[in-house]
Image (cartoon, rainbow, N blue to C red; front, side):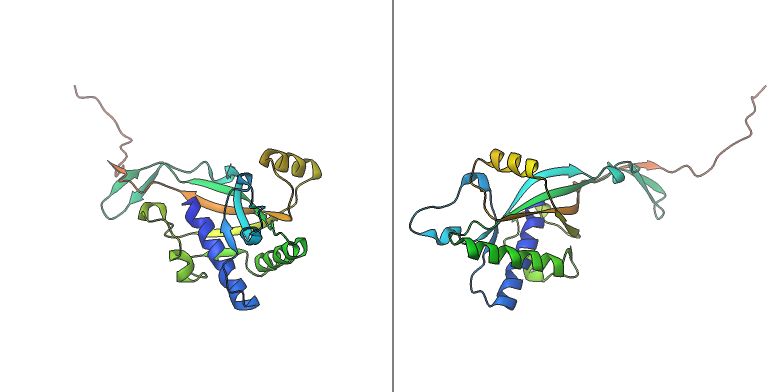
Length: 205
């Protein structure tokens, strides 16, 4: 589900770049910056925008939810653990061989998320949902609402980040992608609802 969420956003960005800037290639893609980039003569592999998950945090405000729900039709209580609500810190890098082109692409990314920072199944293209989606339906999102908020790290945080990645610093920006709810679609346990409360209790003689 995490992969599908990031893929949907990347597909939307690529479609935007093709439509607005008439780009004939898909430049945005998920990737791991710690793997490094091609520094050979064929530098075209660097001319892309890399999306990478660098941090995952649980949304604490939605943690305390009931572990059951009422089914008024069958008068049953369905017991299941509540979903896990997560926020993701997304690092977006433009490691272009030409530094000016990297800054250019990064500015286009920033303008895209300024224009559209909320992604739902109703406001994205069906092609963005199906394109490069996981092959197993259980790994795909059925309904979602992804909100992108710009994050401004301190110089100390930037130093730790690139030191951890073990590479040179490239033009980059960080967004929080919230909020993704993860839930296994299993069959919940059933129990009977309390239909009557007896307040008068007496003992038989």
